[in-house]
Length: 416
Image 1 (tube, rainbow, N blue to C red):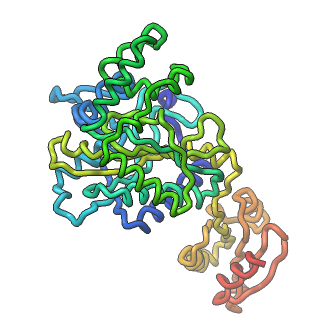
Image 2: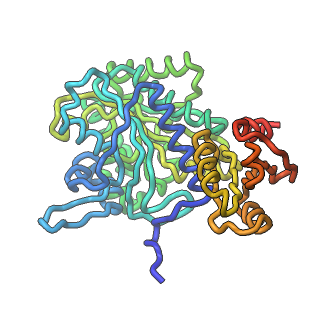
């Protein structure tokens, strides 16, 4: 028997139904803020992620699915989607569109990491990205979208963890101060952080293996911000406060990708324990320029769907249930059954036409196995009278109704 690849998962039954509802909901909310759907390739030239995500990150160092194609070019299955959006922005000259240019996406990503609950090697991300404006209003807008999603999904006790990691002008001062503070602790650092100390020291703040006491003792990036970055953060926090979106400043929050600048954030739920982050994002004002485009400020976030799915299942989330109607017919009434099936589907009912036919008892038994809410029995005598028999499969009651009143009868009976 051939099995699925480790870390790649089939999604079916109730999980698939919740998954689809999440996709529909997040798309509706993104559209309501004026974001447009974009579909991107799942594979890109490896250089895109090496240059954007950062060669010193765990993703590029350890987790990318990279291979050579038949032309000898290095190809990577995308480990995240923001870099692909930025590449598309440049390649398709979206800078000529009205600013800000706003898109959302929903699709697969691939990372070679240890599979665990809510985390797989093939996983899905939803995200929004906005290009062309450095206003903190846009930072808050993407956070608003995140909050609206969690609110609609009834995930409680959410708040924003936020920090500013500065810009090119002020980050170098903080970087130097961080290296100086960490050097006396060099022997206590994990091997990855020892290597990063002089190449990418901010990543040490994001390392789960370093002691919290050490991180808390380090200089705070917020104390090294230039006036422009300080004002940007201050305005962002003020707007969040005006909107009554709860937040806390987290000085160790840097996010795991090198392209981030200025404000970075995570949306967390205090009901979820240690692994409480559901959404993460921030500004990446240099990414487009870094990839060969014009200088373009940008901001966005991404959300892992599998993690959200686990949270919803833990809260006993139930999908919106559609009424299932089972059509029971006999050989001489098949054409009428087909006609009525189409009518019910047009009116929004899940409609199942019995495939085997046969006697009434057998068809009713099959309708029970299919968890039908109603059975519509189409007999020859009833058709002559212009009526149908409708059976409520929950209460076992049965009534006769005119064909023209069928959908109304099921809706009223179902809501009773």
